Amino acid sequence: MTLALSDSGNDRIAMGANMPPEEKTPFDLIVEQIDDLYGEARNFASDGFKIASQEQADEIDKLDKALLKAQQDADELREAEKKPHDDAAKAVQAKFNPYVQKDKGKTYIARASLKALLTAWRVEQHRIADEKAKAAREAAEAERKAAEEALRASCGDLVAREQAEQMLDSAKQAEKVASKATKAATTGTGLKPKWVATMTDQRAAVAAMWKQNPQAFLDLAQTLAEQAVRAGARKIDGFEIKEEKVAI
Image (tube, rainbow, N blue to C red; front, top):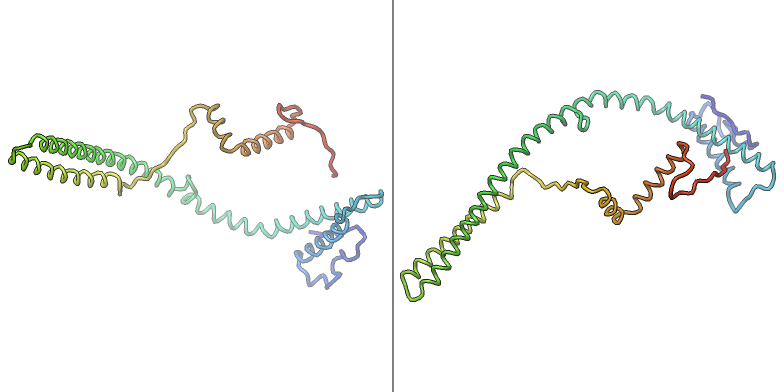
């Protein structure tokens, strides 16, 4: 790669101005060149400077082109230095991808299959345990109601009162059993909650999300409009499309 020198007239940009060129790496040379060009650009683009003559415009245009060439040379050097690392990384990735690539590698595919089996099994076990817990709660509630009714009906009957008290103790034990069953049905299930949003009404969904984050919609609309204009569109509802001139 040949590093171009600036043709802006600044002698400081010549390679080797500060030290013998043979002692500098290509990176040193391009950095020195860009730094000098940047310094020249900074002299122009500061303190409200405006071009006052064609000569100044030509000088700035030359500086701009020198910066572009230096940028291209630096990019070329960067790509050359990076390529062996990229190639090595791609080789490593290609070697491991069949096994660990997200959603495609063997480990992901196998685990997804196993998770489906486990999910079905655990959901069914959770359903069974939940039904048992519900039945235990209903039975305990029925016992408590029966005991309370027996207490009310035992007025003046000591034996009946004792029996009602026993029924109430039994109901309390049943409630403890139901509580344990409920805890067992809701902990250690191997399942975790996952909330999923499924769009059922596009208009209502867009209206709701617009209220939540209107800027995201505006940014998306602007991006789509810019893509359409680059593709040739010259009229888009809600947008003013006009031609502007920029320096090349």
